[in-house]
Length: 165
Image 1: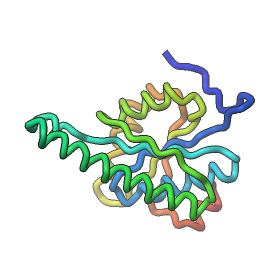
Image 2: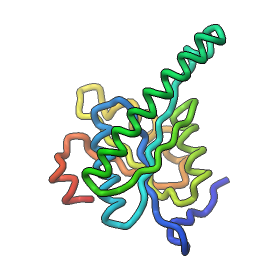
Image 3: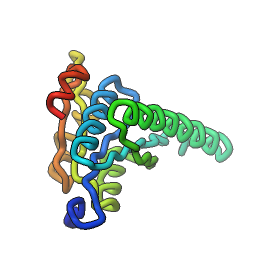
Image 4: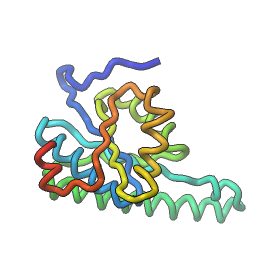
């Protein structure tokens, strides 16, 4: 069941959601979404997803340590991109950390925050294809999201992104 987006209701604003990971194209998605948010007076939400399958198979103390380490790394990565968004677009980003599969984390966050109106992904530029995130989300899961997905070409420069943002 999908809920109607509230991003244009009084007291709300449209938010752009970017999944932050360690891929090089992630910067392109943050840059584009930050610039779009600034130009449309919207918001920016940065999502970091913890992958803890390995930690769940460890002894309790080791699993807790692995979980804490993964969360610290994810929060540091989110803060790095939040700083980047402030620098390039003067936009303050909301940082959210979730655990589990990326598709489930995105779907849950979109269901919870009815101001999220657009999911922004960036395609990789390598021979391997568009990248793991675009490959996994733009295909089989894309029809299940209640918001449009914007895929930013990973090879675009800041100037080129400014022209289309």
